[in-house]
Amino acid sequence: MLDKYFKLKENKTNVRTEVVAGITTFMTMAYILAVNPLILGDTGMDKGAVFTATAVSAAVATIVMALLAKLPFALAPGMGLNAFFTYTVCFGMGHSWEFALTAVFLEGIIFILLTAFNIRELIIKAIPNNVKHAISVGIGLFIAFIGLKNAGIIVSNEATFVSLGSIMDFKASGAPFVALITIIITGALLALRVKGALLIGILIGTILGFPFGITHLPETFDMTPPSVAPVFAKFQWSDIFTMDMLLVLFTFLFVDMFDTVGTLIGVSTKANMLDKEGRIPRVKQALFADSIGTAFGALMGTSTVTTYVESASGVAEGGRTGLTSLTTGVLFLLALFLSPLFLMVPAAATAPALVLVGAMMITPITKINLEDYTEMIPVFLTIIMMPLTFSIAEGIVFGMLSYVLIKLISGKVKDVTPVMYILAVLFVLKFFI
Image (cartoon, rainbow, N blue to C red; front, side, top):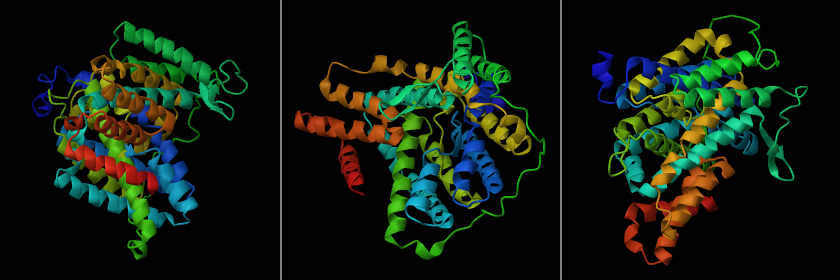
């Protein structure tokens, strides 16, 4: 039944591979269950309710992706978008969390409409193939950077922005050392082609964390999920026609749209899912899952739900169908009742998986034409700006805007489609908003 529905043989995979891939994806993104309540909780939202909203919205959106699009992508409230929700909309602009939640809900409704009219699909088709390959490479550097940062291997530095962390200073933290050891062990497992290498690496990192004091047994094993009532459907409709709402809504729309587009393209490229014309299979259904997830997530009481770049870890384990994402979605539901166990896994154990997946995702660079400067420069800007701005969306902006401008100035006007011109104008407007 599973083989027939998800076409496992056709995609050269099997149930075991898909399930292991789904578990791996979940383990690399389960941190959102701990982080999202902390970030949104700063606004005054009930943290327990946000935990439940996060788990349920991630589960529903990912299962919709599995059953509707049949693709190995997982979804959850997005990092960066939750920070914008809290620290810009609520703290910076002085709005209530109910105002921000209303903006997220409206964003989801608008995205459903844009997807229904094929506008988001049109944008994906308009992106040149070389830039699509560059998005995969850029995401690889970006998630490796996230992994190194989460493990404390690299840290912020006022003089040089980033620097090497205290790897051997066990009094400060054993996390960087544990992460480095886990990277080496997991890398060896990958070299030996051990099935489930990334997941095994996460488990090894968790065990290594005990003597270094970074893995802790749960203080309580209370399995009762907190009530979602304090944040469920708490919308504020009185300010929806204000300029502030328009500004907030535009920012949510822009960042989420190009984060999602970038993730879908990047992970699909790595998985060799793109057809000869660079199209993602069932992309409309995937975008519907993303849109439904955002609207449903807001209803539950959490920030924007988006497709997760950590899905690449499951793809790296061989995940190719919706059975991978179905597994991840089911695990999010189980997390409601087993949260103490899932939250026990430290960042130092999951960070190595992100670093190694980042390494795997740079392989499409071999498909990029680096001889033509009108192609190479936009590709380079796409790649380099993702980790440096800590944003997939900003990398796409710099890459596509430079693509249009350089092509125009160099006289290669025919290489630029009408959709690309429209996007370029929108990108320019973004800098002034």
